[in-house]
Image 1 (cartoon, rainbow, N blue to C red):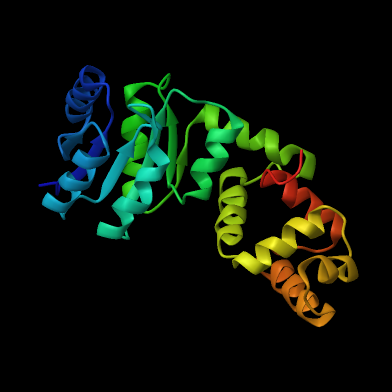
Image 2: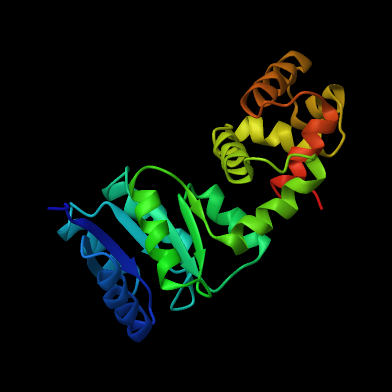
Length: 225
């Protein structure tokens, strides 16, 4: 007998959410759903159901950003897997979702079969981005000439970007503005040696090869237009 997979489904459109959960259970009877329609009910539901492994979140929860809920859920269960299920299919929302450490992104124009596939894929420890989200990430990477392994490349970059300290991030932003070490040290009132050390850390964490590579990665991260 297949073990149950408990899923927290957070969406403020109750009719759509309930309909989706019923159809998903018809696709795979191992799916078990706990439903919530806002921040408070989502947090309480996770507290009451510690065996939830995966959460499906809408990005718009009664006018609030669903991404802001992720840290609250992670406080309760750090290993919780996250799939964004949304009507938004633009670069900004995909980027911001990746920056929040999600494992999947599926737009609401996808079929029920694709959402079921995303759930099973993420539950196994892999990432899943549907065609619309992948095409957006492809558009970000195409100028880098790296069309292969798009999802993993971009996810890896965002994960490393999040590992930068506040001071390293500050230096990274100024480097992306073509400032040299002397000017950065003067602006931040630091020694040149300190700035060089922080620049080295940035290059190492983001696997930056040279200044051109730095600028390309700054563009991908939305730091440059």
